[in-house]
Image (cartoon, rainbow, N blue to C red; front, top):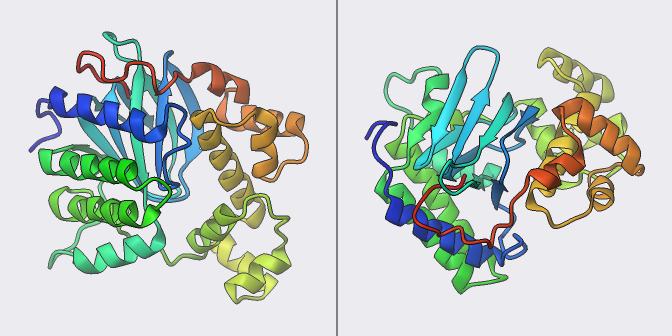
Amino acid sequence: MTAHSRPDHTMLARLRRKLAEAAGGDGAGLPAHLGFVTCVSRHRIRNVVLPQPTAVFVLSGEKILHDEDASHTARVGQMLCIPALWRVTVENVPSGNSGRYLALCLSYTPEMLARAALACPQPPCPRRPDPEDIIQHAEPILLQSVEHLLDLCLACPGDTGPSCLALETTLRLLGRRTESRDLLLANRSSSKERLSLQIMAEPDRAWTAQESARRMGLSERGLRRALEAEGTSLRELLRDIRLNLALGLLQQGLLSVGEVALRTGYESPSRFSSRFRERFGVSPRDILHFRGELGEDLAGTGQCVV
């Protein structure tokens, strides 16, 4: 199917309803690898960097990604396959019918990616990842696998094992049935990506060059050189990971600005807010203001809400 195929509004309505049920209205019922973004006003967020490869299913409205070279628009019934550490400007656009935007976000762990890469081998003549492959049509079998994932979240609350297996199934389907394999399953062995995953696991830790190098099995000088060769530094990675995790927490709407600041390594909420606005072009309170309530009639009339 092409990226322009007509969406299945009946299936999308079921996914919106089940997402709201699984999340418990506020997102607290979802396991860590599932997330959602919902809003009621159009807004733009600069310099967004996702620490892990992520598939975003647009259930209502539109999501637009702007990078240095082009813009990529995913409409209802489409999905975005976003590689890790890709810096973009994100624009969320509510539906003209429902007045809401809603997207389901699936992030994948390094272990899932490694197993999927083995299960979905490269073609004989592999090609370089193409930015045009970011937007994909969510064909029926993919949407069915996502619905199964939400069903397991509902059936096994508090037990992430079944949902993790279902999540990995969605990744394998993406690798086999879309053109996005190389975007999601690229080799994740760079120092930048390995260190990013460690920081993401403990964003509130007082990370030092000595501790970071020790965990990577390198000297401080070796780590610094490795990161410089990849165009970054420990300080830049800390800022990127912490602020983007903070953005995700605020979009869930479960914590106050002060709580988000502490969880992402900022002792001062005012300093956190300043750094956040400088990075994304909006304040933490703006993110809370943009957000719609997940439990508010998302099934509606079958219109999309991503």
